[in-house]
Image (cartoon, rainbow, N blue to C red; front, side, top):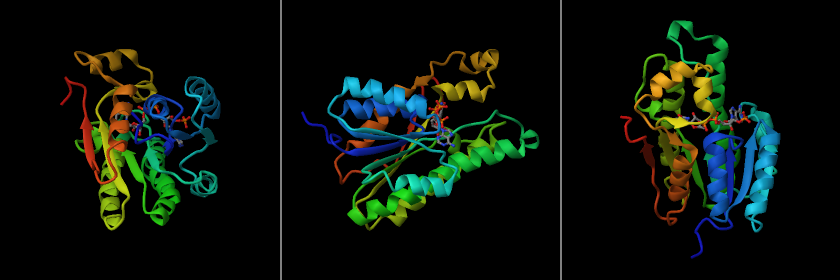
Length: 246
Ligand code: NDP
């Protein structure tokens, strides 16, 4: 059976690891062409080679891109061609600290990446979707954007901003055939987990105790499902938890 995603051009930011890499693998499996972006270009090249071997029919292009740099995003996006599905996945957390202990640098990095970076990429891609009156923007938010927790103020705020931006975009594209979705993972074991606990394995273990976290594939399967619905169906929002997380 032919997949609805076959031959679609799918742009994934933060495709060099974790959820983004898993999305690349699952969209490749569905026969999509990939536009992969992240700062670690060598990781993207390795992934591209692997996927080209596994799925010889698809086209894969890689772009070294820091989503925080608005002008560079615009310049790079001009080379993307038509984007059918944009997955705004690039994002990070820098440590988790009490509000009074958060450094200016950590705060700027999270806001610049998770919020402004997502806006930069969307601003570069959405006009093309409007022109063609088709496309799908899928934002990777977080449960943290919907329920704040202690020591996560700025990260939670950045993901709450993603939720608000997604809602606003839904209204701004209501008279078009463009779909806007937000997928909110709970705890996923990725490189993110190491950064979150600053490499403190004991701390990570205590948080993961009694919990089997999701892995990138669990989220990628969800993203592919959401993108693969018929054009008149928009799954606007989803929360995806490990079974023992609430
Ligand atoms: P990873 O750390 O494995 O992946 C993050 C990706 O974002 C990397 O590919 C990284 O690539 C990219 N990235 C970071 N900063 C930039 C930047 N400035 N420009 C371009 N790309 C950037 O973590 P996850 O896969 O877990 O995270 C993916 C998304 O999922 C994030 O938005 C995160 O907030 C969200 N999420 C994760 C959860 C979890 O528990 N893991 C839970 C809920 C949401 P590179 O370094 O090469 O640029």
